[in-house]
Length: 311
Image 1: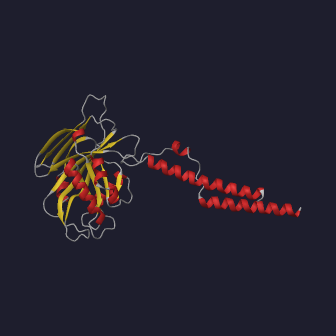
Image 2 (image 1 turned 135 degrees about the vertical axis):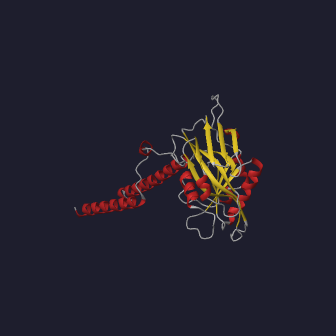
Image 3 (image 1 turned 90 degrees about the vertical axis):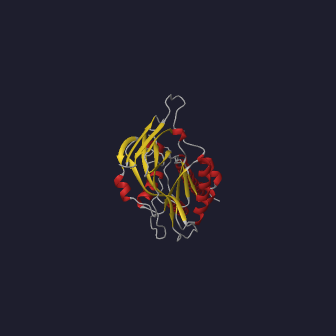
């Protein structure tokens, strides 16, 4: 084998290895920056009763967000596992049903699905998916197993500093006559901003036409209303008049809070990648340019050999 042939092979191998290396680095970087902003709270309010409560943030229950559909058979196993975990740990369940392109599931809503996509940074949510306290997505029946869910539910976000003298508190109240809701979150360490969400949740809805075999569907989120900041007062009477349960009169409010940090996106999701981070990566050549480079190099060397043979 001539020197020029060896040169072509070495160039080819170098370019291909470069491609694989860059792809690997980019993939690892994305995975390492996938931490989400934590979610805490889980305050349950019956709209027919007055409510007033103050609890330390550390005593708030874990929160399980579930993405499902009435035709999703593997979802049944995951939901049963979460129910078992919730019964043992006091975890609050919020079940979001698929809406986009849906023809079989009557429980999905555009508002709820859009909230899921924006907060969890998932363009196309998959079912079954379980997310505990805003953490990693546990996708599929295997990931959504009892053991995985239990481990996540018993590990709450650490929102307090050891050096902090004040205890982080959540104050909430609701007037059933005026539908006025008041909230205040105090001394939450590590949160540059607190997002407040009112989830309009139906306890149980009867729907025997689902193809996954369930007749009763629970903890259905029909709507999510974002409130400004970590404290304030708002009138929910209009929202309560417009949002209704699928059947019965068992609509409840579940209040959750999102902890925003400056080094993450505003709506929870992946950490921002700056120009400085990108500059550390070599340019991604791509496989098509690599092949073209090899071909052009081969032609040039072949022609050069032809000229050398003439002279």
